[in-house]
Image (cartoon, rainbow, N blue to C red; front, side, top):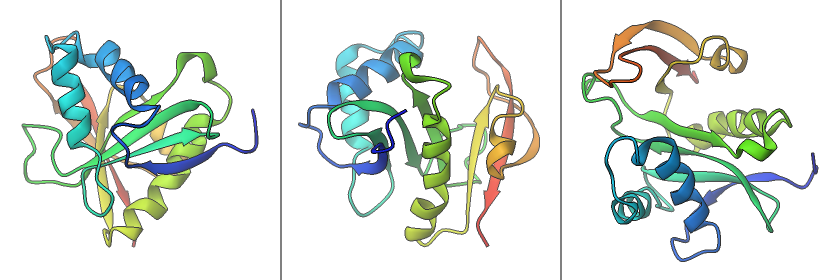
Length: 159
């Protein structure tokens, strides 16, 4: 994979990658959850902030976008007591197994620290992926999502 790929904060909802980010999220979970594409665009615009959460980060070489993740204050309705969250980690299917996920995950620590935070959470159905990047499995959690009602809750401590 090209060594010029970097993970950067995405702050331009009018930028050339915005539609691709919306397409990924829509195809991944928006369509399944009954969202219109317009609702997804609105959601994604809300996730783009320069100085505060929610924020969106992308893996890019400046010409193409290869993956993304978002930081949010809320993600799992059944656990409003914990925050912030890492969510919507995605690598374009054409670029998987090329180190993009590693680039994304390695940038999470610095980006979360730069926001003055000492921990972050995520939930996922994946087993063994996030542990590679220092995430601690906390518990199985009921998400009330129809396709995967029980998922895994993780925490990344930065202190």
